[in-house]
Image (cartoon, rainbow, N blue to C red; front, side, top):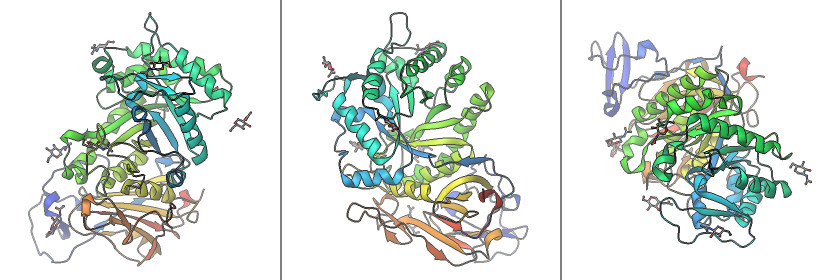
Length: 506
Ligand SMILES: *[C@@H]1O[C@H](CO)[C@@H](O)[C@H](O)[C@H]1NC(C)=O
Ligand SMILES: *[C@@H]1O[C@H](CO)[C@@H](O)[C@H](O)[C@H]1NC(C)=O
Ligand SMILES: *[C@@H]1O[C@H](CO)[C@@H](O)[C@H](O)[C@H]1NC(C)=O
Ligand SMILES: *[C@@H]1O[C@H](CO)[C@@H](O)[C@H](O)[C@H]1NC(C)=O
Ligand SMILES: *[C@@H]1O[C@H](CO)[C@@H](O)[C@H](O)[C@H]1NC(C)=O
Ligand SMILES: *[C@@H]1O[C@H](CO)[C@@H](O)[C@H](O)[C@H]1NC(C)=O
């Protein structure tokens, strides 16, 4: 730790991070704080000076609703008949209910290999044909997932196979029609649909290529198909579900007319591929900033076609290709996840759907059906943060976000400020506007001595675990007024129930 004073401003820097010239494009960092590279001069004190946080409460540039955070399940998990996921488990249902209301997307890499088969006998593929394995989604499996979604109160979004093609290259809707008919007969609610997943992989994985123009036409065909079914007539469509590399295609698809058909332009995002990942990536603000750059691109491309078009991040996690073993499911994963929620909220991304609820190393619940740290973080986020989003100043080596607090749990007018400290040193924050205000604190730290790679998370020092298959009370602590201390490698939500923020009163 280093304490320096420049031009009369005293700062405490974390040595590990201070040298990084990270460009945080979103935050307009308080100019008086932006002198980290300057050589020490003048008198220095051996006392940590807090980071001054300013929240602009006059203006909100976006609003998040109760479905802002959702979850996925990957269709690949069907190859293993959902693995160990037991839809009838009370524990699983309770955890799923804790995330409701939310969008639930069933799709992903498996979508474009999948055929729906009306067959009461579960004929799932035991030994998948390699690359790409074609597989059946059986009626039995479809009924199981629909009953689960209904029971837990999720809003279902289903991703159809885009590679069912006619001889002329257009999308063949026959199998999708079969699935819709089967679903309509059982009155299943499916609020949204998609067509295909990450077109970038069509040529490499499927030896198929699809022009943006054709894909836009196919989206209209899907819209027409939905009109055949009163149950799904008013369901929405999102597209094109492209991932990191295809920003030009994303725009071309929308510009080819899809912007008139989709409820939201949808895209996917991962910071890096699991095999290239390192533990240090998960607490690196430069890695967090990769999302800033990506959102800039996507927002720019979409708004050049239609500035009003909503944007949804419909599949996202830390590391692509299943998540990073021993890291993506640990306490440390929360830094990228919470920062993503903060950034997306600030950037008017309406919906962020986490890959995934179950399966792989980035899941919210593990193979034994116990909650991973990001499960708790997601539940807390939904319970605490909702409504108008405000701009907050921070510093390049920490992250600070502010929004209205969820009025389901806090009085109207309450504000929440959430702060991430991805550094190996304690950081204090001076939230001047609220220093005299009472506050509730949710301090989230590693749940045991494994630290960053802990399988657990602690809330105000208490390790979070299910109790008899139920979630415990996730209660905050009344915290002392004045500056806020955020321990090394932790994040804190601070709710000001008496803030009386006028934008949060409505
Ligand atoms: C899918 O189901 C069809 C019809 O039941 C069957 O003929 C086919 O072998 C199945 N395909 C796979 C990959 O299991
Ligand atoms: C179908 O589901 C809708 C919405 O859940 C419900 O309002 C309606 O009563 C159901 N209809 C039948 C025939 O079950
Ligand atoms: C796919 O088609 C587009 C034109 O529609 C072309 O620009 C692109 O190079 C093709 N990609 C592959 C891998 O063939
Ligand atoms: C992740 O960390 C490794 C090891 O330090 C580094 O080589 C790599 O560039 C980092 N990845 C990103 C996306 O910054
Ligand atoms: C996690 O990653 C490891 C290494 O890639 C893999 O062997 C394992 O199957 C993954 N775990 C799950 C639950 O997918
Ligand atoms: C954080 O600092 C402590 C004490 O300086 C050190 O023991 C620990 O290894 C550091 N943790 C990480 C993840 O670098």
